[in-house]
Image 1 (cartoon, rainbow, N blue to C red):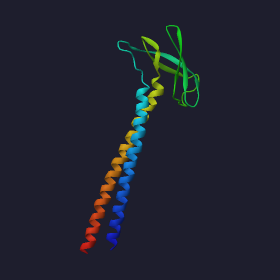
Image 2 (cartoon, one colour; image 1 turned 180 degrees about the horizontal axis):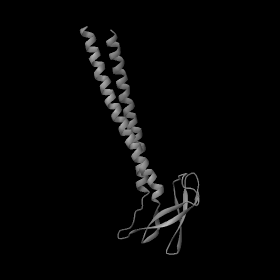
Image 3 (cartoon, rainbow, N blue to C red; image 1 turned 135 degrees about the vertical axis):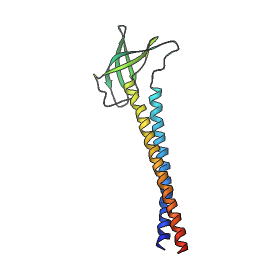
Length: 155
């Protein structure tokens, strides 16, 4: 009788483990994909035939959702703004600005947008790892639970 009860408990836990693993895969997959997309869309898109040049810029202001910075190309000043905020980059912080050689007002700051790509990989990897571990744990508990129930019928 005890084997049957333990078997039923293991089967219930395995179903719960499958559900939780699926939720982890879904949530972490969505987060990873979102961060990855933000990082990719923040990358510099240059016009055909143009090249990407780099120059040092300086963050001139930040608030909860935007970061503004100043950079110069051939003595011409530019002020750029990104709709992202990273508390590690405060006013006065020097950053590398990538710009389109044919249109210097077209820019990107890989140091800021790269964080989102990195987070995408981290969240995606954690979701996959937790999902796989949960899948194997769920299968193991399901098999053990079925074996225990079958053994309890023979006894």
